[in-house]
Image (cartoon, rainbow, N blue to C red; front, side, top):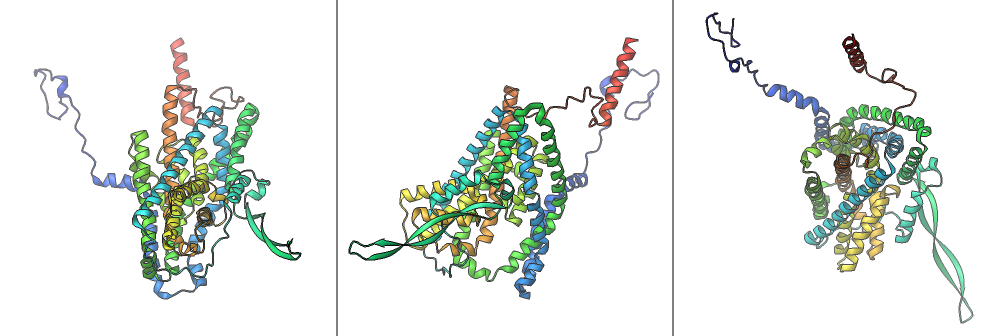
Length: 527
């Protein structure tokens, strides 16, 4: 007889106590297997970060060549291709994910999740707006700044505050779903001359600013989101008759996510050329940062505080989980947001990250994230508040309490419709300036550095969407534990044609083997 440690024992020896039969301790794995697992699990994140760094180095190396605009466009073509690929799948992803998500939820759960999501988006946007105003009043980026306002090229046409909100409501209810896929409604103005009688017997020619609406280029995501949610609820109301169509949207959605997986592996290359192209386009970096450095620093500092302190604290306060581990799970999507500068284009990658790396269910992520990409604009609201105070300080205009509250409310409310308004956040900034009576010609200064500030805005926007999805997942889990029937996230019911588990064509092979083994054991026990 041999002991477990390999030493021989004679027949006359006393029996070895069971405690001595201990298996050999296996050696602890070294750093190399851990490093290999880390690289396999985070390869895409590391490649995306490497793409940004290589893009910055490539751009700085190409700048001395003084490329023409045509050569820069050709140089940036791989990055343009990435944006086109991402925008290609926005429409099917948003519509299918919202239809399947709304159809898989009970109406009561749909209302609760949607209500909590809108409350989170509203509170965080208000916090971002308040932070932007406080930082601008504290740092005073416009005081003593010596900058030129330029010729005003590229400044969008300013709209009345009432017309901007009416356009928001009009875009919620599109008149044509097909045109909503590539057009949105916007109000413009024209001057009409008319003769007015003079009490003295003459005539005076006066002009009126008459609003008129027109369809402009740009996807009306807000209208598509509202229609998809209502359509999904209607399919849920149909019961078994609507399950076939729900299955179609689910399958369409899964196929779209497969395309997203393929595009994700091309993203590092595209991001590298996007960053390099923007660096090559810059004319004089030193002069730009010296004149607008305080404004840029104020915006980026506000985005950093809100993204790495405020939002993580909110997430930790409600979940008691490490928020920075959650951020690492979506890091590749955040880098993609920085490279593409588009919340909508980052949406497919964000859905993939929160589901596979942060454990958010498909029903929640594919229902909340498309809504958040449309209505949740923390970064844009913060940047607009900083820009409004900056322009006021630049013109030596002191803001009173009422004007500050107007900036906060207008920035928070108008950011909801930013996705359906042409020119994005810059046009929304024009609305804020009009609301408080500030000059709009200074927007040309904001346009000069919008390419940089808008990227950090996008990162903060998509980060807020992801944290909202994580908070709703925790909320639904807690509610399901207390009352399993309150939040129904079970998805579509199994088709009634599959009478038994064995007849289900989607059943995996190992499950069938388990069923056959259990049946044979049952027959043997009967015998």
